[in-house]
Length: 429
Image (cartoon, rainbow, N blue to C red):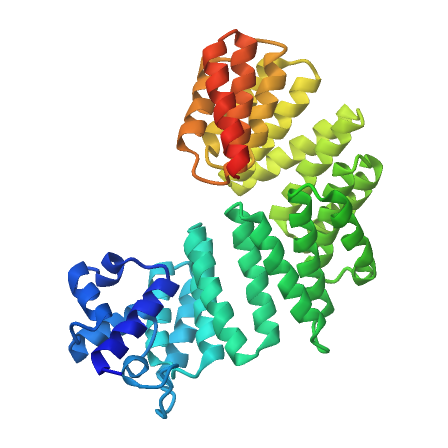
């Protein structure tokens, strides 16, 4: 094959795999037209230009110059790749994400093309950086690149961990069916490994069950978790607490609130014992909800206020918003619509793009049956419907509840508009 066409073909393949446009690959160093000509094989880039392109695609120059399909050369591994990788890890731990990404990219350029495991590890760390920055689409794409490298390296442990991370970010993107497949594949791999860590198997099982529950397949989730019960007998790591928490959620979804309270109390005790404030908050909020469902409003308020105070101490806006929403639900049951509305305004203001906001709109509808909706709150919900860029099912729920609100207000035109949008979104979700 002509050398220019060989180089162009490899550049195009990698660019598409990384989901980069020609303009993004070009950056400020080249034009989109130049990249297009290179990919067609009409132009052969200079060595300096190829070095820049190779760095952006995470490959050494030798990958593009070698004539073999995988670009494998006999060049020795460059030891500086390890140095860049370790520096990147430390920078990432320190929250210096831009600097960490730069180190990881440099580490990739120093890797031998056949160092599949190392390249997989670097792609994985890059994915984690984007996940921390809430750039979930980029995180997903880099986890997918890491999966490919670990599969080539035949490293079952890292491949399973990568698939679990991929499933987690797919959940954040609302891609629940895809997440289900990622978790199932991770479980198949970890169960075929005779030296697999049982607690990590439990982590994957719990994530799989949680995703089944998100898809309202509660019986399947319950049976899966029951089958894993023996793995939770020794509460010695994070997976035990998460198992109890998800088991509580699934039991509550099946209407068994006594079991839900029992499991969630176990989760709360565990997270408190290990000092995990985030999941302590989640367990408190869930407990408040389940206690409210059985009519124990006194204990429900106690749990809700503990969660609220914990969120205030942490300073986390999403947690504080969720705490306000929980208190709003309680206020509705207590017949205090004014307090409920105030909590909901705080929730929507603090976290306007939080996935749970869809459920909050349902609480507004419950409130509207007791008292008129404040104009400020209605405006926040309309803004949510306009600005939302996440899970389409959440947006469908928002439009559905806006439609119900306008029906209650007697505005048939607006009600029909929102309900129509809701139907379209549910069909295409």
